[in-house]
Length: 80
Image (cartoon, rainbow, N blue to C red; front, top):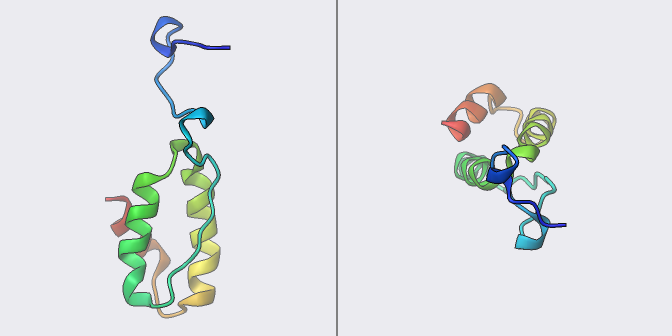
């Protein structure tokens, strides 16, 4: 079924047929110095529907892999 979002009052979204991944998987870089760039790129390129999942994964995984990194600060920099 094809739906034209503007004709039914919905905002346009990404479609699976666009070849875009609608899943979210956080794969942290090897070095903490690469974390800001990685998170920013990941968050800004993610489908809106996956942001909450990515933020939850980051909140759990960053302290485990990089205990010296403040998760909230890293996420704020990524999302700005």
